[in-house]
Every structure is written in structure tokens, then in C-alpha cells.
Image 1 (cartoon, rainbow, N blue to C red):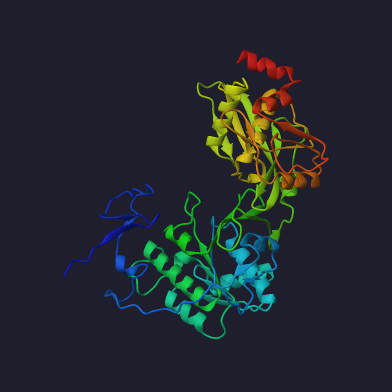
Image 2: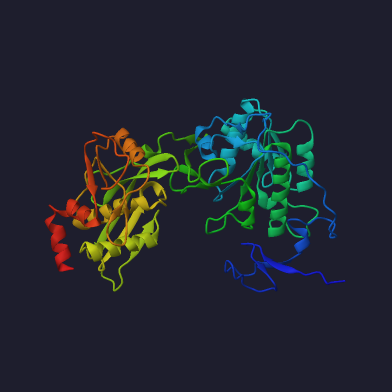
Length: 466
């Protein structure tokens, strides 16, 4: 009889090793590798002898559905992120930093669905029943018919869900606390998390109940546990925000039933999370219109246009190596913009410290912010404020050319709605509104530098001296 093979799995990232080591090759963490039984994970079970499979019934793509495909919560920002509501039989993974508001949002969603007549079950593995009730009282959800349980055993949870009428939505808070009898490892390990998530997804697919799973995040901001969990679920949502600000952003990373990169904006208050229907006003609420180095970027998050202020500070340095500090944007992208400005525009910033910040703690990921960042940098170096009623967007290439971006009409429409009459955008942009005035089309980054610093004498002195 062949000897059973053992493997060693990292409990932080899920990397499989053939032998034990002190440091994981996948994530670089120390003392996270433990021995794991390969037959106890996905595809394994209490019996280690494989049994003969059975034939399953095959069907066609066409057919009628018995129920509505989605369960709408009535919270418009949450429904926007999920693509119109929770899909029946789907599994949604929600991650975020501790204390960011994950449990608060899900409790409000559970209460909203319960008021609409849906059967909701909330299973808490981190808090006792009394603690969850205190949160519900604070949020005004104590009077709803949400069913509550405090349990961590997978088999007991499944037996509870199978009793009575099928639930419309099940919330598991959180997957790191689940443990199963068929796995010989501690709760929170890779094998336990993988087994628990698989069991919950199987229940959702078989019964048609929507399943929401809460996941912890690592210090890098990624959902803790094996990466295979994100592939198993149907949608992955990240709850982002800075504790120094009162707003929270729910971002879609993966969605099999709707668009990705969609966001929902909430404002934290003593009564829970409040929806922000116009996030652009929130990000531009405390804008200083007379300060140099501030440019308004017209961005897109999924199908939603968002206007946000990009702030830059360029100051001479007394150190041998200039400092580059970035908050809310990609640091490598900033280095590229600085190199293009110096190589093609004659703007020398090698002896200047550069600080870049996106107002309100918002994070920008699309390359369309290149022109806005360049405008903020040139404005700060020239000590010349940009026009108050102007927005900027466009992608900058290594040759200095400004490339067009998608959804130009939506960006301009959002800017016009908030009172921005002018816009600086790529010259070859399509879908421009006919008859729209105040549009400045640029073909390259030098055109932008000339536009901003043409009348700034101080800027010319700085570039000559540098």
C-alpha cells in the first residue's frame, strides 16, 4: 500500500510546500506553514477511500425560473454595487479592515430585507447574541424579524438553515471562525476556511438562498485565507475607508452577475451608515479654490462618474535625494509622469520634493488621472492656481502624447452638473457633446504645460535655474 503523501500549507496565503520551512516562499511570512492532510480539503471528506460517482441530471440553458433572480435590499448604494441586488443561490464575499463597518452594513441590509418580507438569518461567529442585539438596537433594526444565531460549527449551521422555510439571505460573520468536524485543524486555518466556505456555497447553490460571507483582511488589505476562496464565490466586495474620514466606499472587485469596479459610497454616523447619492459633492466639499497645486479629476468608477480633487505640493529639497510621497494613487505612475515632464516638457523636478494626495482619502486606479496629476504638479511648481471651473482627464504615454479615455460624455455631464464649465481633455476624444463650449483639447503634455504656465514668470525662472 502506497504511503499517504503529506503537504505543508501556509496559513496566510495558502501556498503549498512539499516540506516544512520557517518562511513561506509565497508571501514571505514566518511561522505560518503547518502540515495539512490533502484528503481533508476540497474534494475530501471523512472517508479517505474514493467512492464511485453517480450520474447527475443534465439540462438545457433555456427554461423558466420559478422566482425573481435578485433580492433587492432597498439600499440603493448596496444594490448598485451588487448589480441590482443579491442573486438567489449566489455567494458574496465581503472584506474590509476591522471596525470599518462590515457588520453594520450587513445588519442594515438584513433589517431592510426583513421589512420587505424576506426571511433573513444572521449567523455570528465573533459576537454573542447580546452583542449583536445591542448593535441592532443602535441601528433601529431590533424590531425586525431577522433570525439570529451565534455558532461556528459548520455542521450545526447547515442543520439550522435546513430547518423550516428556506431563507432568502444568510449572513455568516465571519468565515475565519468556521470549523468543521471532518477537518483536523484549528479554526481559521486554510483547510478549515476552505472547507467551511465550500459547504456554505454548496448550500446556497442547492437551495437558492443568497449567501453573504464576511472575511478578514491581512495587513496588506487582502482577504485573509486561501486565494481559492475568492475564485469559489460569485462576487467579492471590499469595504474601504479611512478612519480619519467619515465616509466608507464599498467597491466591487469581482461580480459574475454585474459590472466590476462599481462603488457605493456611505457616510458613517452614530445611527449607522447613510447613503451618499452624490459622492462628487462629498469629495469636493472642502475644496480651496485659490490654492495652487489642486486639480479636479473627472473619473469613472464602473458606471458612475466621480469628481475628486488631486492635490500636489512641489518644494525644493535640501537633501541629496528628493522625496516622493503618494497617498491615494500609484507611486510608479507618479514616477512616470515626473519623467515625462522632465524629458518632453523641460520641467526639472529632480531637486524638488513631490507630495501627491487624493482629497478625502479616495483611491484612484484608472490611468485617466494622468493629466490631472500633471496639471496639479505644474500648478504647484508655478505657484499658479488652476481655473476654478475646470476639470482634467486623459492618459499620458511615455512619448508625452495624451491618449483618449472611455466614457468622455459621462465625465463631462457629471462635471457640468456640479458647475464645472471648462474641461481639459485629449484632442482625439470621441463622443464629445455637440455645441459644448469650454473644452480645451490637448495632443500632448507640453500643450498642458504651456496652457498652465504660459503667464507664470516665476515658473520660467525655476525651470531655467534648475
